[in-house]
Image (cartoon, rainbow over all chains, first blue to last red; front, side, top):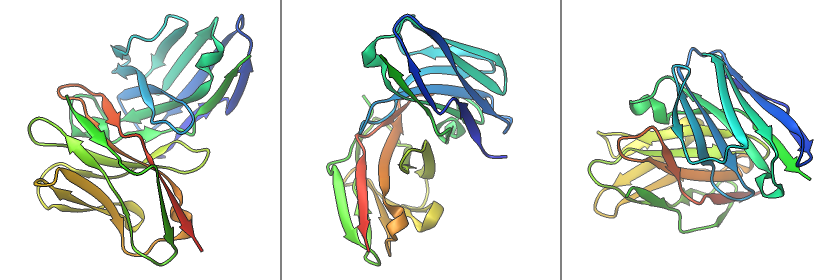
Length: 116
Length: 113
């Protein structure tokens, strides 16, 4: 299984809502990533988890809260978002961190988030 | 600082013709370079990488890339384009001593029948 799955595919939420994005992989990968992608732009790294521990936080606002319950799952909890947070949120995984294989990342299809 | 540049926002090519998507890089030390593709409404897919060794790197779906140190380029090529190759292509380089990838601005490839 070389697939990264993400749910939901689409999410519309108000600025006062709390929601969560989910990501799952069963490739035995030990590194997982959250990216944000605006239309026609490259992905921007938000968070990196290595062996279920947060290793990189790219100065992301606290209204985004990542969680890695186990080595296969990655969540992104959303609270009090702003309309400018509307974007495609991509999850990715790689075999490990700290080596060349960390740059060969498997991406999920993304969750398209709209904040109203 | 490590960076990559993709000088073309869009490349148009007729089906069956060769295609080139350009990427230039600026890195300190020996570069690791990557190409990813993003099909409509999908996540990114890894295509190929250059780490060391042969300057011509072969990847998925018949794509290859040529590493040119003197021109600091890593152009993506395919001998015969397919309509299904139409997608957004990103070159990428790691930030030194981190697990972070920096992506170029992307080039939209449009292959016409």
